[in-house]
Image (cartoon, rainbow, N blue to C red; front, side, top):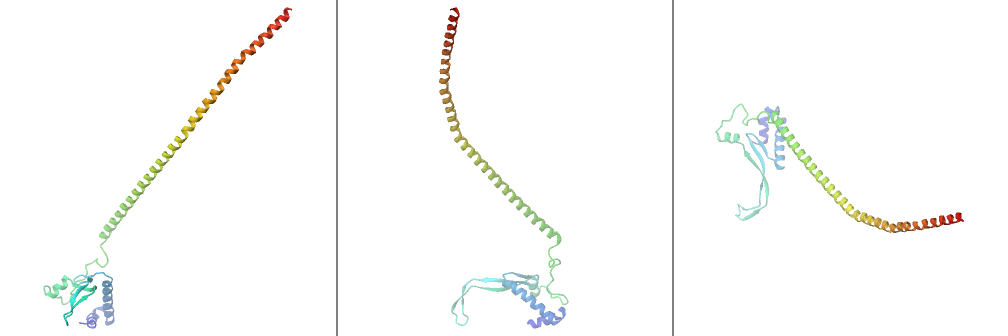
Length: 214
């Protein structure tokens, strides 16, 4: 059966020859494009199409028997499904009025059931929340470490400044003591001069008394 015969075989089911030809072309084009891109096309009950890479190797020319090196290449490969194998081997009978390859199970074309999608959504949300929690914890720890480092720097700077100011205070105290020591003898000298004034005062009173007596 060639492509034209395949189109004729499904024309009645597709509503016309042109619709059948378009359907066959669309299916084959989708399969070829997927396999070339490296994807695996699997049809339940029929088989799978995939791309296989063959490494470089040596082969023999069947005509001359000469050994020839074959370059690395990629080839398409088709693997028949179990249902297809069973029909070909005869272990299962080919249905007359039904489709030989069973249809895809219900829900497989429209996506997973709501329960499965909800469970997947919950798992994804849980993963996101755990990742966000880990990131927040890491940020908090780094922030705390930075704060402690800045506090340690401040304490060291204050200790250095205090150490520098301490000698200045001592020098100020020593200079104050020296100034008080220098001013103390001056006060003593003034105290010693005071009795001299008293003696002069006594002499003047004695003179006045003698003058009165005369």
